Amino acid sequence: MKRQRAKQQGAHPEELGGYRFKNPSLRAAALAHSSSLPPGVVRESEQLEFLGDAVLDLAIADLLLAQFPEEAEGSLSKCRARLVCTATLAAKARELGIGEALQLGRGEDRSGGREKDSILAAAYESVVGAIYRDGGFVRARSAIRRHFAAELRSDAILENRDWKTILQEQTQARLRLLPEYRFVAEDGPAHARRFRCEVWVAGVMLATGRGTSKREAEQEAAAIALRAT
Image (tube, rainbow, N blue to C red; front, side, top):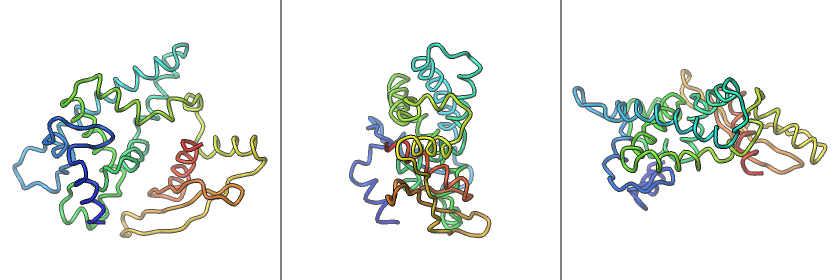
């Protein structure tokens, strides 16, 4: 794990989430979790998280309006809420390698902090805030659009359905088959268990998902499979 983090940070130390920082100190600040800082030090990552939360809300609202101009406000509000929820943002952080790049205190790291949805979602918002500070709203919106490209392309995001249902409907329509979910691992301390599962269709493994429950792991696996198709 340490070699993986070093490799990721060493290749392009100013890059994160597909964005190249002009000011690498902003990238570093976004990745410095409060547990890694001594008492009395300003938690800049928390300030960036506060900023990123607002930037993300505005950018997602703007992108949804651009993608679905005929939708009513109520439908768009529900859609935005699903996109900026903790589970979704944590999944984005995992996809972008933010968890591996986080600077955590030793205790938080040992207790599985790098896999906690709450920490990963906050870190994603911190990164968004750092991108905004570094390049302005247009660049932040562009990065967010790339991160959420699959969701924004799908009309299914407007409907109150889960990813497993959507994947099942697609595989039934195309192949007349149902997805099969296989649990392959369970790890982490008792208070922060992590589950990993695979989704298979027609003997082919489509994706792997992780979560704090088996249902969450299945949902993430289905969502990743849908983005890959």
